View 1 (spheres, one colour):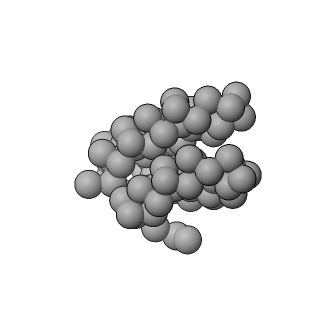
View 2 (tube, rainbow, N blue to C red):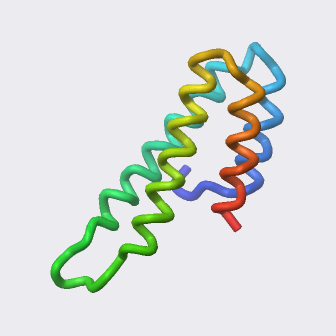
Amino acid sequence: MLIISRKQVEELIKKLADPAKLDECRDEVKKMLEIKSALLWRAEPQTCCGSLEGIKTCLTSEVQILQDVLNALDEGNIQRASSLLTEYMSYLE
């Protein structure tokens, strides 16, 4: 998984309803967080590349939402995790 799709997030939200798949969901969110964190690192301003500030701001927001999803899952707050993932889908449009 290198690209995070809206369909993938929708499927993840559905999986959250099954307590037996909670660990799988947590792993999936961790992977998504790794991807976005790596992209954020690459978006750090470089002297030769002009301004990437808009991309950096968007990626920072995505990383924060995914971290909040992971925290909600760790706390057992499935409702919040699902709500945050729904919010996260707006970044994928």
